[in-house]
Image (cartoon, helix red, strand yellow):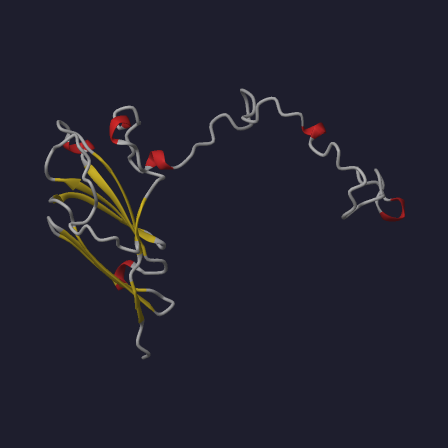
Length: 185
């Protein structure tokens, strides 16, 4: 069997903090390891470290070890392994309203570690944001079509192509009829 190429997966992260509610005191960490089946991966979470290794179906060996800035509570952390990534919600051990200044113990720039701006909120705005429980990360379809009106506001679709006459391209010069007099409507 050929040797797998080893790479660091991209890791993204965001956080929330609370001095009084442990349920609101956590880190979001996503390890982007596409095509790694759950049975082809190992994940170890301790109070100060997260280690992941996994073999993809495309012959890539993903490996990463994250020495965390401060302690977490592994017993109250959550894991969701999908076909694209491993999503972690790690509960911070110490209840503090202040954010961690960084995810890792080291102050060096780590090329594969990035801020997850989709989940990030500023420290002074975190009480205003509805709490994420992964269900809130998916947009709903309320207000689109159906009874009660559409979600497209007052858009006048008849004006959508205004000003494009004579621009050429497919169908140029046919007007309301297609080739050989076929009606397009």
